[in-house]
Image 1 (cartoon, rainbow, N blue to C red):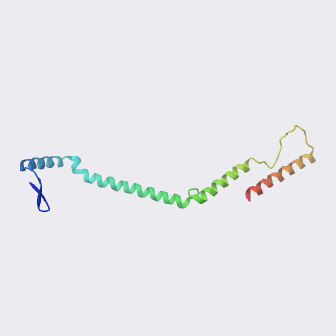
Image 2 (cartoon, rainbow, N blue to C red; image 1 turned 30 degrees about the vertical axis):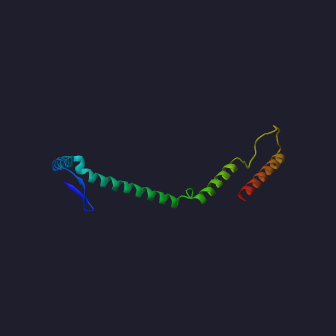
Image 3 (cartoon, rainbow, N blue to C red; image 1 turned 60 degrees about the horizontal axis):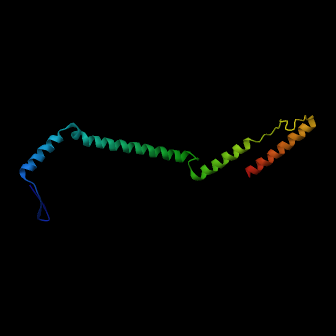
Length: 128
């Protein structure tokens, strides 16, 4: 068996070696793994394609529906969340006895008005 390239002999194989290689090839080709390899490969590639397509669809769906995934809206939502968490620590009603003195009704009302004014100022400053 001779292989030619550009009209010149490139490779030479004795007929006995070629017949032995052909017999080995035919014998290996009859094995179950090699018979079904092409089908398995196609099915595996098809499955990978399906999984990748589903993943891309899910990502696109999330990008479309979630503001948090958007770089601009996500930052705005995060800043808003931090501002809301900061506002949670403020109370509109102060019932603590910081200096352990009792208030009469007028003193209590005055103290609550001061607290509400301070909290209102903080809320307006945060919302701006």
